[in-house]
Image 1 (cartoon, rainbow, N blue to C red):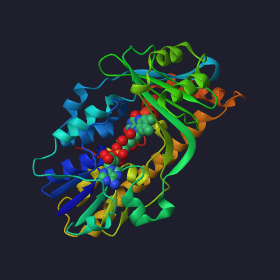
Image 2 (cartoon, rainbow, N blue to C red):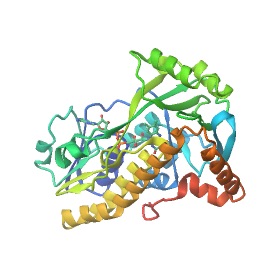
Image 3 (tube, helix red, strand yellow):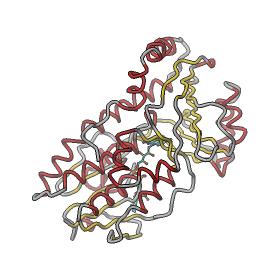
Length: 360
Ligand SMILES: Cc1cc2nc3c(=O)[nH]c(=O)nc-3n(C[C@H](O)[C@H](O)[C@H](O)COP(=O)(O)OP(=O)(O)OC[C@H]3O[C@@H](n4cnc5c(N)ncnc54)[C@H](O)[C@@H]3O)c2cc1C
């Protein structure tokens, strides 16, 4: 089968590796094959790790990852609401993950570097067009229309890294804002924050605004922000994609192009990897393309939409004002229950809902 993939992020590169290994003729298109400039981390849970094993890069990816055992959820006023095990997640710097996936591409995968302005010509000469072109996917806009345009949530996300060791591993829900601190491979800190929408003319101004919003709430956050710098910070809006069925005729959407979700459950890249594996399985030895793509949609659509909805619910909970104390009381109680039931806690932290069918 001749398969053309637009987008060489996590989803597109993983799909290219798996489809080419299955004997398909694969072309991978991206405007820029360079690694991302900033090495912020992604949490990858066991189902995604199994996909990496199927591609043959799990050991290489793990070698550049860290695997914290647990982290704390902290509420307004610094109250620890729960200590959650990491769910066997590993934290992988995004450039390292992409480098490992790209190294795994068989040499016969054709790479084309262009900024695509019109996806319609990409369908010519291909049996399947895979839209792996991310949050603002041109493939989705072109085939699914204006109603499928990504929507903003009135929030700004800031992410960064610092060379200092993390003072703790935590996510603080401060009442209208969120601040996360995780370790970075090599001993540094990875941090992320969501605040109500605000953009300054430059990143220095964005960081100054963040310090105004969250500064003084917790010593650990102040320590991380003191060590942060504009050149090691990235800032963007928070967008998600409305629910779309990921297949139309011979075009299929995977990863963020299909279901970009709020980052609050840390599952965008996880579902992107599972999509890639499910697509390769569906097309493997398929005689007819459309039934194979329908099988792919049946397998992934509800799972991916479940994560999208769950992430959005978590976003709302995390960003709630929380001043009545009701949210933190409920979370504190849930945290105490989970602390007495480590297996259940692991499932909450990352194992469920996993897709047991996506395996090596
Ligand atoms: C703050 C934050 C934290 C996150 N943390 C996690 C986490 O811990 N765990 C997790 O699983 N996920 C996490 N995610 C989500 C994760 O980053 C994304 O879901 C994932 O990277 C999506 O991969 P993708 O390949 O679908 O899209 P992308 O990575 O966006 O790749 C799309 C590719 O398409 C190319 N492209 C797009 N349009 C064109 C065009 N017209 N022409 C040519 N090329 C084009 C782009 O250059 C790009 O390379 C987080 C996201 C955020 C914002």
